[in-house]
Length: 124
Image (cartoon, rainbow, N blue to C red; front, side, top):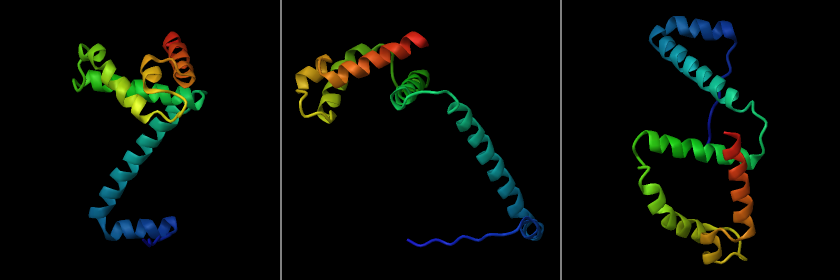
């Protein structure tokens, strides 16, 4: 698909805002929302981490959000582990890892991830 971009000088943009005050309010609110979101995201990226640690923290944050909003019950975490392991072994990228080894956490990739998760847990 094709797109168009309109570039305006600040004075020209202010002139357009004066001509269309209804849209000016909407543009100001959208700009404010973008700026607040940008500042929040920048503040989250200030911590030096490896990509694996960053990914693990994002997964943990999402998991905690599910627990907090009642979309995941704490009592079902232990019960659902086998189905989560089956799903993970089905999607596992390594050809050398059998499904049973993966479900038990015995493959080298799984052991590395487990070590990193434990390191993250210790730091929290």
